[in-house]
Length: 255
Ligand code: HEM
Image 1 (tube, rainbow, N blue to C red):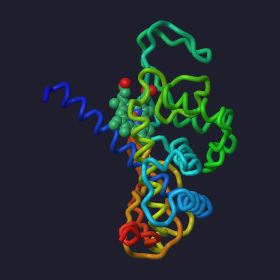
Image 2: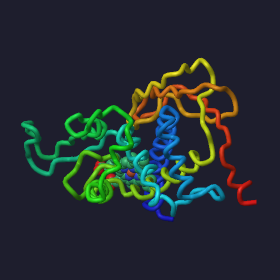
Image 3: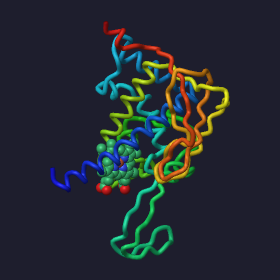
């Protein structure tokens, strides 16, 4: 393998693993905090997949509410909250003069919480993505291809340097979150975590949770503390122990 190929592999690994894993954590944490949303996702999966097999990647197109949950998670907690571009020529943006060759930081996090574009921007409301097919196509075009005119949903950036892993990321996150919802009831463990989840993101370049979500067999709390931790990625500041209770065992079901 050449040095370029090794570097490409390293880039893809770095860009693709943490980002998707953080998104899964945020999604599961929000679902724990919103039992009615959790229930709706579970019901959707059970109505499409049934109770005899594990959800598969090919089921995802038939699970629009799950897709809305993942989009809403990426809107609120983009693992890459800032991207950059270099100006090819002198230009003016919002009244500011930007000289040629100057790097501009683009705050994707702020764009996706802009009250001019989103109603109640800080609320976790997956329903906002259950839009008509027409509007959906516009959104998807924007997020997947960087085309279209609606640049308010940009967790993967946009344009020719937009994230090349978008389809893979969606596929992994949808399938993992769906399987967790299908198989487990999840409860926060330990009284010290309290009952209210703090969804504040932590410092860092990537939007990771301040308290990492750890699944363990102990405890009986009810809410996730969503405080995020320090760093460039949005992560939780202290590990959060979540107690899984098996709801559906695909191995038992297929026997
Ligand atoms: C939830 C998951 C992910 C998110 C939110 C995400 C987000 C982003 C963002 C915001 C950018 C910058 C785009 C821009 O400047 O317009 C980017 C670039 C990139 N992403 Fe992702 N990404 C994710 C998963 C992945 C995966 C799974 C891969 C590959 C396996 C990947 C590979 C890359 C690469 C190689 C770039 C650099 C592209 C370039 O500079 O031309 N990402 N990603």
